[in-house]
Amino acid sequence: MPARAPTAILLFLGALILLAAVPLVLSGWILFLLTVAGAKALAVLGVVLLLRGKLLTFGHALYYAVGAYAAGMAVKYFGVREALLLLALALLAGVAMSAFLGLLVARYRAVYFALLNLAFSMVLYGMLLKLYSITGGTDGLGIPEPTLAGFELGGSSLRLAMYELTVVLTAVLVYLTYRFFASPTGYTLRAIRDNEVRVEYMGVSVWRAVYVSYVIAGGLAAVSGCLIALSVGHITPDLSFWSQSGEFVFVAILGGTGSMLAPVIGSVLFEFVRNYAFELSPYTWQMTLGIILLLIIFFLPGGVWSLTALVVRRGSR
Amino acid sequence: MSALLETVGLTRFFGSVRAAEDLNMRVDQGEVVGIIGSNGSGKTTFLNLATGYLKPERGSILLGGRDTTALPPRAITRLGVARSFQIPQLYLGMTVLETVLLSLAARAGRIGVWAPLKRSDRSEEGLQVLAQFGLAAHAGRLVGELPEGSRKLLDIALAVALRPRLLLMDEPTAGVSTEDKFEVMDTLVGVISGSGITTIFVEHDMDVVLRYSRRVLVFDQGLVIAQGEPAAVLADPEVRRAVLGHV
Image (cartoon, rainbow over all chains, first blue to last red; front, top):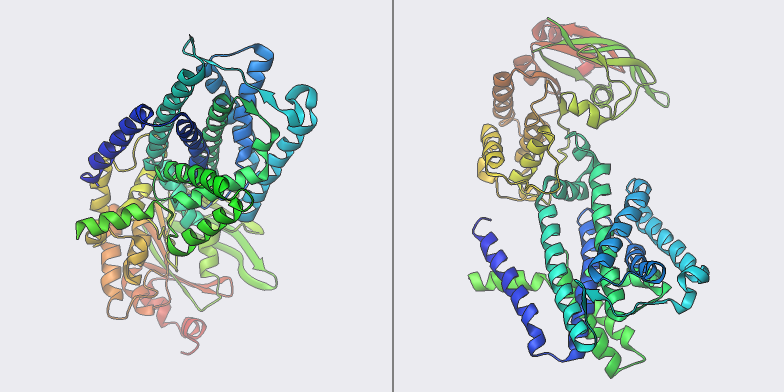
């Protein structure tokens, strides 16, 4: 482990520098696609975090939408335009909402946990849809171009700034989640997956470990939603729809749960596959995604990330 | 001697099956007590009641004079009661060392979200715990890859790592071969007697009870039918009939 840790840190830093530098050679739309992928990777990271404790959620889009709408409301009702402030507000809203719902949800497991989350996300979806005067209903809310650290940016410079902000935020939050996983609570979550009874017989609260993980996952999704709102410039109730939650689970399986970087890789892969599949075959792109998921489940059950383990194993022979 | 564990009128039924009825017993500080009885006599139920996994219908459980009857397992563990299981309850996807480190972190009450579990001082202590149980060589292996005997020892090591005042072991030699059972018990008793932990162990094997317990309790259909010095109790024809089915 001590020998692997510096290698992993070097790889992480190398990837970060590479990602920060790619705007020099990439076109605008690819940059936008990477921004979306990086932002969504945070919501997927939350799903992966919960999956480590064998907690599958089909309602994680709830917090994604909470983050996006917290930013949207702050813009609409308080005229806030500063991206960093909007991100902080979104994080606060996501943490507050997950801390509140987590009091109940953290008591459930398996299908009840999955469906309770789904139910809450659909309740929010309904509210966003029906409270037209507040949320804009199906029209959603427009998010005007934000300022970043007080700087007025627009067009390609804003796109570039949003990309760099997403890269930095994703890297920081991936690192913080990695630290969480390496902590006693992170290990407790893994222990819960294997044997909840034994965890209680260690004098450790299972509920607390699940609750803390749930709140962290909610916060990650809220930041993700806010980044999407700022990058896309428009939000709708669909952000909270069950298919969005399904997409997060899809990407989590695609990337794998073996590493904190897996959601990022899975998310980037997913966005590119979806875009190219849509471009090549606009009416059957969902089928293409379905086939890819089937191939992953049958041939790479550990997700795309498990390929790195194969490469490392072959390299060490 | 002061009583560490005391039960007063402890009663628990499963439907019409009597698992414990009006159970009054006391275990003093520093004792090593063996519990024997045929299948279904209420031995494991007693451990489950004492550790809060099951709640009695009547009666109470006192730990060092404090009533723990209504407390959940987590709270009772924090008061210094640890247990092992007949079928080892482990985290199969974690390494042997990681499981012990988690026990050590739990003992210290340090289940935080930032500082790493694998601190050098904790790892050192974890390896010492594993060495006591002859498991140090397996530290880096996944628990799921361990043979049954080693799992049994690790199950007990996790409980001992909590440094309990009272250790409850459910059939520590179950699943261990006849040739190895004394070796396993020698290892366990060596660790336990060195740390002065009060111990209650449930066992089917008369030889193990005779050799390692200072006092024995005989359970039969939820009642304690005899107790005392092992050799004398096990020589009692009534006890042999109840436990072995013959004199």
